[in-house]
Each structure stands twice: as structure tokens, then as C-alpha cells.
Image (cartoon, rainbow, N blue to C red; front, side, top):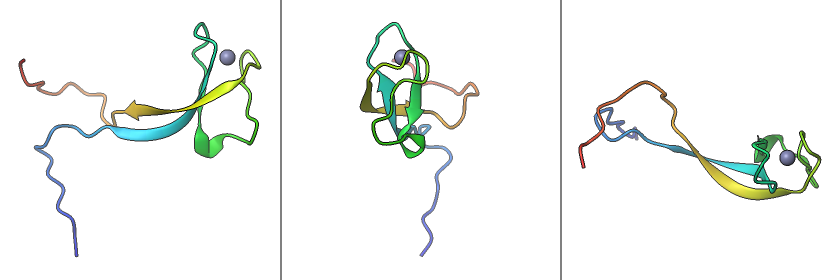
Length: 67
Ligand SMILES: [Zn+2]
């Protein structure tokens, strides 16, 4: 069975599990799949927080529905 993909639907955001640096001044994050147990921030060596990130697969402009 194939699942039809409707390209006209609103752009899907891919939810990616990440580890984000707890330091709010630090923008570092790594994908959880690339993280190691006890992963520390690659930039500031601080603790990291497991969270999610929404990534849009397409960065091109699209027609946003007017509010
Ligand atoms: Zn950091």
C-alpha cells in the first residue's frame, strides 16, 4: 500500500530530536542520533538538554496563508 503525498498540503516540518546547549548564549545543538551518552556542548563544554527541533525540509518561499 502506498501513501499518497499531497504536495499542496501545508509544508511539513520535520521534527528532529536534538540535544541543545543549556547556555542560552550558546546556539550549539547536535542531532540526538549523532550525540554520545553524556554529550557535552561542542562549543562551551556545558551540559546539553534533550529537546526537539522543527526543521522545514524546504527553505524556499511558499505562499503562506494570510491570517
Ligand atoms: Zn554551548
